Amino acid sequence: MAESDETGDRLIGAIRRNWPDNASTATELVVRLFRLRDLVWSRSNAKVRRAGLTWGEFEALAALTSGGPPFQMTPTEIARLMLVTSGGLAKILQSLEAKGLVRRAGNRADGRSCFIERTDAGARQIEELVGSLTADSERLFTSTLTTTEQKRLLGSLEKLTRAEEKAR
Image (cartoon, rainbow, N blue to C red; front, top):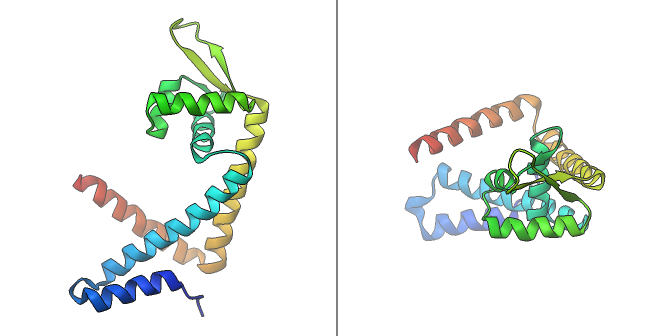
């Protein structure tokens, strides 16, 4: 039998009592999705903090890594991947640089800008964290859902996401 989700159960119970006309399967799905997101976020954020990073620093290192070798991007390219302002990114990059996880490199094509590149320490940090977060997700899904259930859920979430994006 599945473990209880007390917070989700309480929220759904409150909706059923106080807004019975809105107590639908769709409402329950949204509550469960939000609750799962909060639980996964909390675990992930705590792990990133224990590694000595803020979530923004983690995202910047992940964005920098996402481009592949040579693992360097302009600040503008990183900001675009993170959806952060240039001012917010500047603070994040300064902190990562102070921690020895990134460094600034010249841009021969455009002397007005620079590249941000991962250091070896930054590579180790992001690879370790991404590996650990991925392992946590694998444990959650494989211990709870069959492979068929995981694929069905993934397909449903993809379909819902595409429909919502199209509606925008």
